[in-house]
Image (cartoon, rainbow, N blue to C red; front, side, top):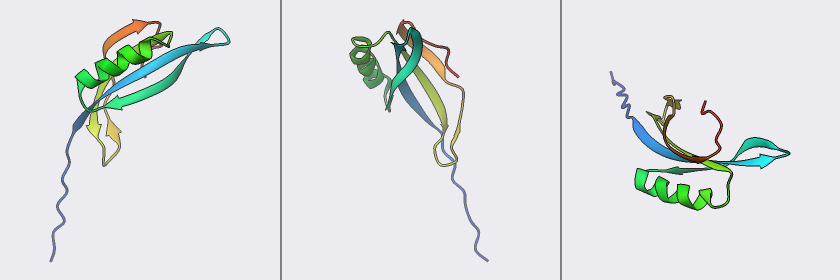
Length: 84
């Protein structure tokens, strides 16, 4: 009898969410995902130049199962919406 072995691993991703105004309302526009916080901070600086606001957050989870934890805000610039 063969036994199946399940390997579960958790990873952390750093996401940069940009926000812009459309019709006067603040809305999410572009999101970039990075494997390292330093890279995400560089992306944040780039997006901040052309956005109303930018949020940098990290999220941990299991990519194979699609189960992700709650995002944790690390840094912000300008106007942002609450992270869900």
